[in-house]
Amino acid sequence: MSFKTNQFQQISLFDQLAFLSSRRLDRLKNSWAQTFSDHIFSRIDESVFAQLYSPNANSRPNAPINVLVGALILKEYTGLTDEELVDSCLLDYRFAYALHLTSYDEPPVSERSLSRFRARCAAFELTTGEDLIHQCFVPLAEDIRKYMNIAPNVRRMDSMMVESNIRKMGRLELLYTCLANLVVLISHDGKPELIEGLMDYADPNNRNTVCYHDTGTPTADKLQKVIDDAAILLPRCREEYGDTSDYQLLQRAIDEQTKKDDSGRTIPKAKEDGMTADVLQNPADPDATFRMKAGKEHRGYIANLTETVDANGSVVTDYQYDVNTHSDIEFLKETIRASEKKEEPETIIADGAYGSKEVSALAAEKNISVKTTGLRGRKEREILSKFRLSEDEHMVLECPEGHKPLHSSFDAERNRIRISFLRNHCEQCPHQKECLIRLHVRTAGTYFSLDAFHKLALAEEHRTSEEWKKIGRIRNGIETVPSILRSKYHVDRMPFRGKIRTKHRFGFSILALNFSKLLRYEKGLEKCRAFQTE
Image (cartoon, rainbow, N blue to C red):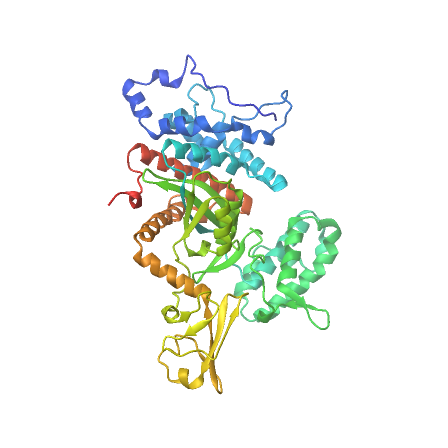
């Protein structure tokens, strides 16, 4: 299939709009379809996707790229399924007008063309690492920013967890499912000799019996049997099935969840053996990782959102997407490294999870200032502000009660000061618990964290400075974006699995969100109150 740009844009003699009444035509042009046609569809760069198709111009041409991309944006904006989207393109004048399909006898969009386009984009990124959806997104977002007259010098940033559409599995169910999937594959290929003695795993009803209904057998015994059966099957079928995903997932699960005992038998890992966050969570989504955040378990991915904002409104101008073990600081570092050096100073506003000296130094090289609002973790101990330090902050000179330490030494690697006092100075001191003092035979010691000391000073500045209060209000505005993406665009319940497929769907959701911001701007509703003059 060859690449060809969509040049069929002229209105034909039998265009559908020619037969509409003036009232209907006015209503159509005052709807969202006109805005989409002018500012989204007409600005989609089809050449970004040329790499998906053959350079041979003599082969059958592709379906129009701008129609497919535009349709997938409208799918997210309206919350339609593929089938409903195709019906709307065929029957709804707004969709036909927005996608410039009114002069087509038969619109070039179908469920198959949409699914094939998504599959091509995913396969291309899998082999090359290039995300074409993101490459299409960036110039579109920049065009919207310019049209909304939003200055580029203030950006705010926040991250959000994106749940994978998988169920939580215990160790027994995980290993059983991986083993059953491989047995079923071999059974369908008609090779019973490889799965002799393991045919029970091909029965779809047996999993619930083993994992849940059989309460008479201890779970440890059931788990060990599944591991023993897997240890029998894997060597048998390695030569014929070693390259299949089912074989590799079972091998991965066994490697991650088991160990060898002294006799060489494969047994389950114990709690003290530990496991990394990237262990297999569910064979339906091998890319998903595990993370605890704010006391909640998350299985899936994390997205980082960058929103450009001023008094005229806000628009998401970039996004990043990765497994949920990726940290906020790493996202910010990647953003700064990818940025060119700014002629005019720019500011990135984020919460405390993005802050570090390394990030600030890296940003300064690009003429970017990083402002973090300190919303991170537990509240620092206020007692730290009452200690008196030397000018270079490498020694503690006096504690809050006026006692001078017996010994004070600076630990540069951990950025803290180890201090010790006479035991009788600290034993009856009312600040003993606040200072986290450890009493010894003759002395009492503790560590004074300079990082915590500086955060406390910064938090105090945030409470009293009008500038920092405004910065905090600006940053708080981006909290609405993850909420909208979850409630309206259902990013936690995507009908796709895998990092690449869900990332592409997430990108279309962000484009739909920006389109809704554009509509609000045209109605005079998209304003940022934090920038309004009080």
